[in-house]
Length: 144
Image (tube, rainbow, N blue to C red; front, side, top):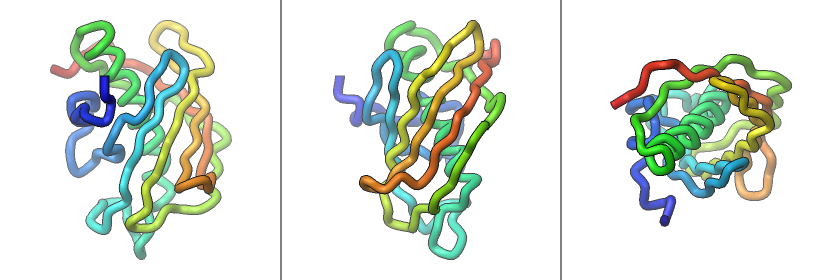
């Protein structure tokens, strides 16, 4: 399956203007990657740069895209809603500028029942701009 042809809106519970990923670019059991083009009209752009809060949301939505893909294409069920349970060791080295392509990857460390723990990195080109450990908790409800 060509992941980049998937409409990201089919995988996410978030709606515009709060969608912070554009494309699912990689998926396997342990790793998921997305891209996001920083646009001038984004709610989280300040002085030509995406703010640090948006980087945390971008990581969370990369987790959501992974979960959406699993639900829709593997388990053939509705999209589950997840919540950020915790963020640890988040380091923002720099924030991306308007026009830059953010490439975010998550690696699943552990998945127990309704909790998923991931290590995340966000890059622009080969520059690491942010990293974090994030815990995502799933709700019982499903979208759709």
